[in-house]
Image (cartoon, rainbow, N blue to C red; front, side, top):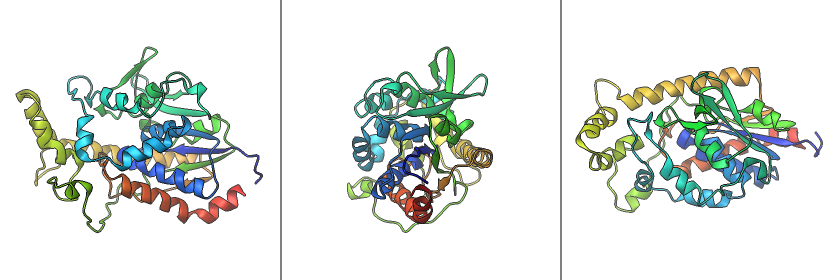
Length: 312
């Protein structure tokens, strides 16, 4: 194919696994492949928005140094407002790395996908505030509170289109490279245990298989009132005879997103699908950026022949 073809990158949803998108973009750049347009869903919208706004380096530097204690600092509890996290603290921090400017003023075409909570319809966010669009796209039900925009309550785009290939084509892409973070979502991989950043800093951690929710429960419990504390115990405590509430909630979301991803890609396939192997990274393991980024790079390397054949 000729060099005149527009390359589109569709970055999929996957919460903390989304740091793999950083590795994907870096490895594509190394191969001389630069996207002309980007569409993103959920964490893909955050990474894609940073890239399209020219703040990708800052984002990579930040996530590469994240510790679970820092992550806890960005969580503002909102149990009674439609989600555990309101997200204002996260959004305030994002403003340091992504300018508050309209999407249409970015250096390259970009759009995020969200879901209309009332109608269930897919919503394409192609103009207006970049930060607001990202915040709406990452509003995972039960975790982040929904976002009100133009009279509609919006939640995570992964409910309807985990990998926005069609949106990428609508932005003008002739060739679409999709990043599927859900490729081995339902498979757990054991990785050799190595010393974590928290352990190097002398911070007590639980077993490597524990999720971030389990690791921060003690911190939250000490900060909450008795009523919320009791509720949080039910959500975060680990039982041996039955899965906890978060385990059920996000295990169900894993299954749902896996099925939706398969269906959408069958109906509107991308030209190349990159599938980082991220089954060992949990939804809230945002402090595992090193592993995720490395696997993002590896996913590009595995399909290097196909990418070069398609684009050159």
